[in-house]
Amino acid sequence: MKYGCQSMVGAMDAILIKTPENAFRNQDYLKKNYIKFGYIDCLDFNKVMEEYKAFEHIIKANVPNVYYLPFDDKAGMDSIYAHDTVKITNKGAIYFPMGKQLRKGEPPATRTYLESIGIPTLGIIGGTGKMEGGDIVWMDERTVAIGRGYRTNDEGIRQFKEFVGNQIDDIIVVPMPHGDGEEACLHLMSIISMVDKDLAVVYSKYMPVFFREYLLSRGIQLIEVPDDEYDYLGSNVLALGNRKCVVLEGNPKTKAALIAAGAEVFQYPGRDLSYFGTGGPTCLTCPLQRD
Image (tube, rainbow, N blue to C red):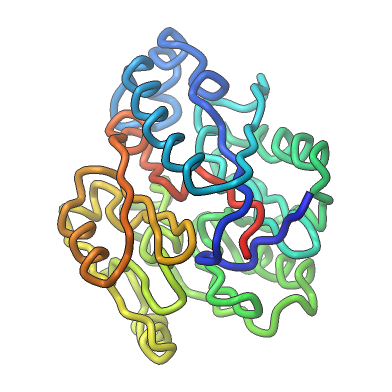
């Protein structure tokens, strides 16, 4: 199959997702596990299924090739958020050790499946290296920004740079704030979502000045997410290509600003599916190929 995704905004041709049945299993499993996985509240399995159906409909209507991660007993409920375990470069997949101990089984499960559909492994971040996919934002095919925080460290960045080699020209290391603490999941993609090459949704309060100035120097229009919508995952926006994007329903100000900037916006209900697990539309997907 075709693969390669050194872009956040190119037209998406292939994507990887995982259904609630294969991640959340059933209501009894959710009741037993939501606290230890750190969810805000217990999910209603039937509600999740309804919300996911709406999300999946958007994806299937806009992405030609949709692949599904199968059930794996080593992967828990967080595995529905397929984004963090891997990044697909033009030369293959790079897999990451998950910072959350309960997610350690996800990368090998993802690797087994991706290799089965023809995506080779380029590398695996190991040793003392730490990295998660949510900390990696492609500015263009040859330039990548990486958040350096609790989930991604210097050794992880060094290994990533070694794996990508001459595929890129520049890595921009973005220091992440302490935020709500070491246990909170604060990624670079928590504070910036690229919507088009010249449009991004951002939460500047957590953004280093140099990086914000860098974005502006590239001619990128910044849509600022208000505090209340940031808390409801308003900064988590999935670009589908051609200025189309997906947002979590319940963020009207961000949606209106995107439309005013010329974006076509799709939204899905996701209080249980996304908000309770703090995983928005980007988290629910692993893009495999973008034009």
